[in-house]
Length: 420
Ligand code: EPZ
Image 1 (tube, protein in one colour):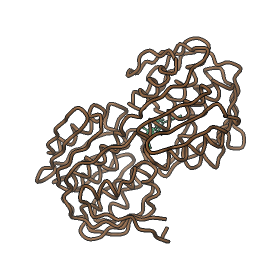
Image 2 (cartoon, helix red, strand yellow; image 1 turned 180 degrees about the vertical axis):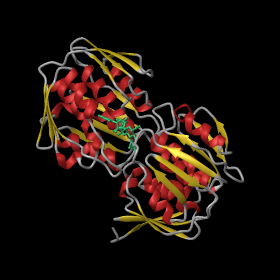
Image 3 (spheres, helix red, strand yellow; image 1 turned 90 degrees about the vertical axis):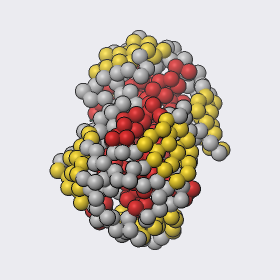
């Protein structure tokens, strides 16, 4: 078990290179099930979640290996159409194998993912969508048991856009008979990259980047190679680190367009943002302005940046109100931030953050990936020493975060510990 020990008070400076996007790769890797053959993904980050997905595909018989930033997948040796509980309990994105298995092999047995650290994470949109595509689905002993001779194109309209369900249904529809219309589809860059990848494999998809996707099913797909887009949430997290520390940093290898909602909020908070083609420079103001916001689906302010924004607003000169409209109970980081001296009150899905507090170092507990990020941000400015426990959460989605922060001048060390 590792913990991070952070000495607060350093103004970050310098530049940091962003790694490949976790949430893109977690959809791209299962897409290889759709066509037997060899695939190469470049710009692959070394993350726990990527390793978990690799392990799942290996358990299904596929060849998966990572050398440096290059991920090799050989889907031709697949011999099991099941995602067992042991794998799925570690990462709910394992459900992404459901659509490709049904489309290519006509059967799938996928463990229900259950909840996550901050609450229930239903998968009804995934199940309903597969049923509408013609699959027979039953839920037995905690598993989704799905069968389909041949999926049939249909019209699927989401009440609210779902990233995972859009991805799963896109992959299933690619090999269905006829046309599938997905309305109110997610438009996150990671889903757009998945759609582009499927097109590279031979899928016929129209409307990429819009809420209305049309998929004309084809007989078969072929392997393809791709470089994963940079991780916009990692980029946003480092921008927040620069801002909370009062420093000036540049993030490289990012796609500024993917961050426009975050950049405009940082500017409203008083930061000076300079955008180049694939880099963003942030200069902090003397004092941060409080900026209220509500998370939204892309291109709105991402829920995956909500915890980091709450940490940042602890330093603002005034009160801000942050609403999470996507996950109404994603506030496990708040009690831990309050242990550092923050003054945050949560009612339902609304956090009221009283700023201008001087955070004081303490031992705090990570509960989930983005909550851990917010605790590290707070530790960067808390007076004295902060220990962030259970950093395995952060290793799920940030590649060597402590090394990247050290390069920016932060005093942060990874320490082995028996503490849990
Ligand atoms: C993806 O999760 C991301 N994970 C999450 O990132 C991200 O927070 C989320 O999208 C929202 O952007 C991956 O891409 C692997 P949703 P996903 O389906 O697909 C409800 C991180 O930190 N819903 O878009 O599970 C759901 O409860 C992770 O990197 C249903 O009701 O999210 C939520 O309120 C955390 N039924 C809303 O839709 C369903 O069947 C959006 O969820 C599915 C979702």
